[in-house]
Image (tube, rainbow, N blue to C red; front, side):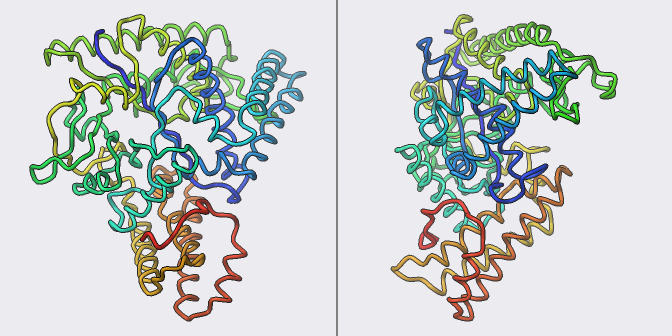
Amino acid sequence: MRGTFCLVLHSHLPWVAHHGRWPVGEEWLYQAWAQSYLPLAATLRELAAEGRDELLTLGVTPVLADQLDDPHCLSGAHAWLAGWRLRAQEAAPRLPDLARDEHRRATMALAEFETHWRHGASPVLRALPVELLGGPATHAFGPLLDPRVRRFGLAVGLADARLRRGARPAGIWAPECGYRPGMAGEYAAAGVTHLLVDGPALRGETAFARPVEEAGHPVGPVVVGRDLDVTYRVWSPRKGYPGHRDYRDFHTYDHDSGLKPARVTGADVPPHEKAPYDPDRAAARVALDAADFVARVGQRLDELHARHGRPALSVAAFDTELFGHWWHEGPDWLAAVLRALPEAGVRVTTLRGALADPDLVGEPVALPESSWGAGKDWHVWEVPDLVALHDEVQERLLTTVDKRRSPVRDPLLDALAAQALLALSSDWAFMVTTGSTVDYARHRARLHADRVRTLADLLDDDRRGAAESLVATWEQAPFGHLDARGL
């Protein structure tokens, strides 16, 4: 074998259930479900039927897993899929070729959903030939959190994964690959054995997994670095396969049906001048780009072997939603790559499988402050007013819980903690920094923060009846098992 390759996919959306339907809110969930999660599961099931196992490492954040198991969201997803098929049917007189293909895809998605997903995602995930990662409950950006809140969010997330999967995950996806010195010890104390960091956190030395050290001493978990040499071949801030002129254009819509009728055509081509989408051209491009990626992975592993004198590791990591949602042809590309890599002499396995080989673990490393965001630092999540809001939320949460410590579980403190974790989601700051649905992001952060303030005030005034009445008016929140006594 020329070396080992691991593909890591990170599946995440914030809690949108009951918080907007269209164009922001639940629509995001249903689009990602239909266009990424359903085809990915079907692809992995097909590959497993060919005798393939340990194909990739899949992170599903607890806040997303909760929604994928939630009856309200399951009903909404089923209705969305039926609506997709209806939209395709109605578009047939104007866009016959596109409508025919979309109707076929929607029908297949409905069959996949009704056959495998009607009882939620957990049974589907447990059966896939993958390693499943855990993570903190609501995908809060860890380096900016109070350590107590950070540890609590991780504990809630790991407990949630155990409930849904029947086993506590050993590996995690740290939200935004965020790290600050000292967090490795917290991970070790929580039983985490491995996690992913971005390549620059290891100064680009990603050929081997590395135990983390603090103050010159190993502290427990092993980190695996995202190999940007191969990852950016697919998708980077500036380029990648999905931008090729033959692929479906993500941004161009037929506004009457919501279907996407055009191919990329060119980066500077306006929507009304884009050429019609051609599935045959796209399929031919998938084959070329899969072959290009397989060749580059092989070359990279050969280079690393020559440099280090032994077979090495290359890890490519992406958001799951890239495949199918953002990049329509992504699931087909994934299937082609996972079939072709072993034929090229590359071992394909999970992070768990790679770490079972001691030759793929290198020397300990001290990690710097880092993330996988723009600049590889923290600035994307350091939005001043949201940082101040987060600090206030954490202070009110901890102060209120500490005042009311009891051996008996208190559902009002549980509700307070759940709203605090929702306020702390990294998504709100990311949306503000990138200019994407800023109003929605600020509304969500402030909504949950206001609930923390109001509920904490009522508890401070010993108005439990009013507090119970208030909480009863709130829509459902995730993590019914959350126990604030863990703070």
